[in-house]
Every structure is written in C-alpha cells, then in structure tokens.
Image (cartoon, rainbow, N blue to C red):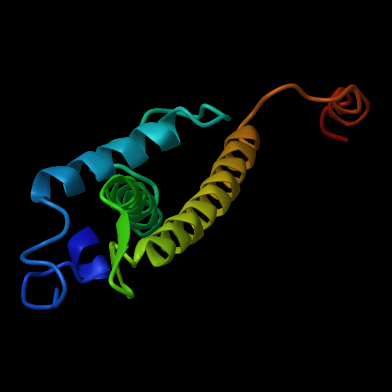
Length: 143
C-alpha cells in the first residue's frame, strides 16, 4: 500500500536504479508510524498493523517517516562542485525531498491529533464522572 502510494517501483524510477526504499525500510516506516501513534497523547490504547484505526492515516504516517529517511540520505549524499565554469550538483532534488517530507509530516501530525482527540471524546461518552445534576433528576424514581 505504501509503495503503491509512493509509486516506488523500479520501472517508474527514471533517475535512480531500482526501488528507492527497500521492503525492510517500508516495514520499518509502518512500524515507526504505529509506534508514533501509540506514544502520542492521549494514550488511548495500543494498536498494531491489524487493528490500526485508519489505513489512510497509517499510510500517510509511513510515507512521512520514509520521506524523512530519504531526506536524511539525500542530505548526507549532497555534493556540489564547479570546474572550468561547469557546475555539477548531485542530489539536486534535495529541496523537493525535504518539502515533501515536511508536507507529509504536517499531514500526519494534524490527522493523528484529530483522530486521537475524536477517539478520546468517544471513549468518554461511555461512562466517567457525572456532574451533581444527576442527583436532581434520577433520585425520584418513576412518577
């Protein structure tokens, strides 16, 4: 699902040879997104791949983590040099990668927090602490 969303297939990658992210890196990004979700307050339970509340949110989180990893690699491999009036820059796509990583990180954070707040509110309607007004309407029994 993540690879399909990113269109990270060897036949579609014209600049790099093969897939940019290995299956192991994709799995790591999914698990990292799940861990990020589980440790972000409010702590409303532990979720895994099978019971994650939103597949689209998990996909966005995994892509955000993958893009950050790709941006780190692109930053580390960045080199620019000039010789004889000719300038060459490897990894000239660095600004694009970092912009995409930031975009997906922002999407991930916003949707994650909205879903967590909604789940927390929904869990609160099942019981909890009642106000003192319950005493004024529930103590008389049937009329």
